[in-house]
Length: 497
Image (cartoon, rainbow, N blue to C red):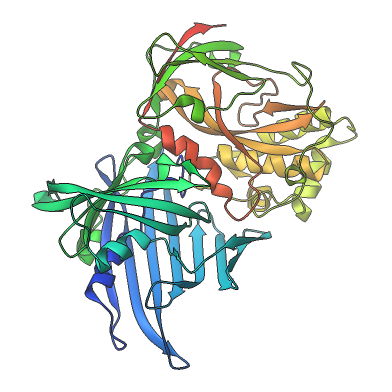
């Protein structure tokens, strides 16, 4: 699966700039098109459609941004569709939001309406609904706030501006700083070159810098963005273009996302599933590894020999190893949500079948992990991310489908469970690629299991970057730390046991 389908993706709303720069009339809508590239390969397009309308004598603006991304994962084609819509005042205040994402056969929708300084967001997933209130003062703008701002009042070199912007990647309001650097001659699609103003965007969420959401844009004197780039996922670029060029299929969907987002390492790790303790050295370009890699019973971090280098120690940890934690954990690891549908009838039936007469939580977890390993017969990458409800009926998919089903079945049996998100060594990649597995809370310890490889003693080539209950209205935010490190991480195994 893509390291982050939403969190950390290049901002796919730059097309709005030209529309707002051109202005709107009550009689006509405006639209623009952008082509999306990853690593030099075209992977999709964005279409922006904006129109003005009147309701009860008041003017409003309706915005719709459709993005379609297509690529391969191994031999399997994958398509992800995202549709963002909003109703706003002509001055930019957001009144309603509606985001729809299709990553499997079912749609995930997040929608909300502003009332009395709050946005009530409702996530309607593939079998579950969740709600969240977000503080929403009048200064908050939609996901294209940066482009909207610079198109209305173009920046000059050296000028800075601060904004508050809602980001569908995390379903939160972020603080955005933009700064115009200076003019550069930029190559656009088709080999054409143009002198444009370089603008850097820095993103803060809850007071912390989130580099995976930073962006570089190049705009003309009117504020229209012709190119945007983020180094997330190894580099994503958008070019303003014609409809025909945006939709052109030449060279389309040939990118293998698994290969493109892998992290190469020197040397091979023989028999990786048998490893139980590995020490790695790693560096992260323009970032601090300590801000990315968590520390737990399996993983520890120490200072390396040189500046910016850290030593990551990873080992197998069973359900009785190390210090015990609290008697219980937060309810989010037991309750159903939009992706982990532990209250689904079929999930409950499969969980009961898998555990049989077992009553011990650890025995239940092991039996569920083994059952999922045996019964997801069709191992494929064609589904980007399905809910446990879907997987329980289809019994197909890759690591993400294994993980949501394990988590749902464990919760259905009263065993707290979450997903772990990170990197896994694969010989065919000559390094590490994205992977998801599970952690269950047994014997007062979070213990790793992996249904893809039938492991209840997870090996030392599983490197965790994040864990998540996938609860709430922004479950995919958990993937952003992995997107943050792709093409920036350099590491090697220096001691293997």
